[in-house]
Image (tube, rainbow, N blue to C red; front, side, top):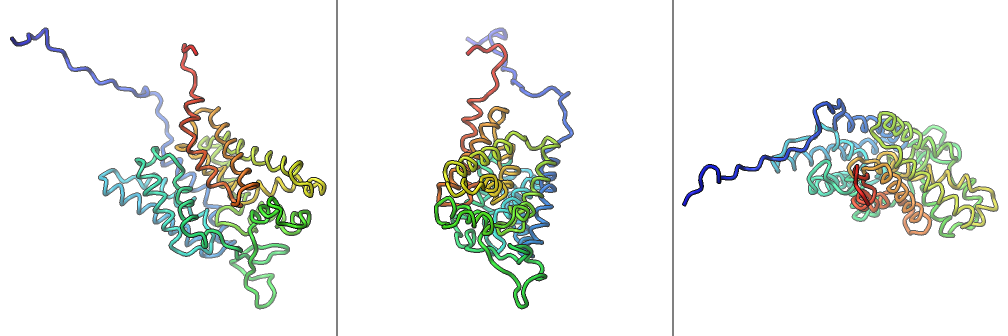
Length: 361
């Protein structure tokens, strides 16, 4: 017996879920990414002034590798090539910013390849990655090439008390082209671990001036030394609405609070010398904190969706950073702090999801 026309079930219509057409926005992924790249250019230019041509070389190698790797993988997977959106360029710049200028030439190439091929494309490409790709690349080369990534000293030129421009030799004694010095974070780490006999002297004369820290006349990685240009670039992105201000504010405030509590109650030499404020500012201006708080922790893909989640995420990044700096064996903690916080984002989103209208607890 065959079924009649009335007994045949019609195929179910597909359920289409989308925004109504009136929500069109002129802002695209390319607009945001190329704006982030532009906001990083002043720091890149200043890095070449401070550390010489090798800084530009590392940025160029990292960007070229990131763009080439993304295009190649998308071609192999027969997907549209999207390198024109600028996301690979931003990843390459950020990866290079996390490297010392004296690292060997292949370090930015390896780091950028891992960032794109493993941390980004293996998860499905832009928008699907769990962790910040540039930081995954940085973590990989940090563990693979520790000599390159953890130099005992950073080559910098003499400028008054501390170090400055590798690109010139003005102001140096005759026959001296450059001097080497430890990064400020290593000195702060030595203070926290009780390896500095005279803490007051180290904070007053052993470290560069706060003005030098703000401008970038210090030893460190390529893109992390000048807090001023990073703040300017970050402020522009916040003004445009492409960086959510809750994350950097919570991040920096938590690091400042942790450093202040340690200076007041955890280290008698700092408290008795009235150097707590100075100590806090060195933590804020030193290392990759500004770069991480303004350009990496704020990544739209790897940060929470809700405002409450952003506050929790930024606070967690800051707490991990200051705890590792004070009590860990690694003087610079920004990279691993953000990666650990990235891992918690799905849980934070679940906890802080906005309440559905009409829903009862």
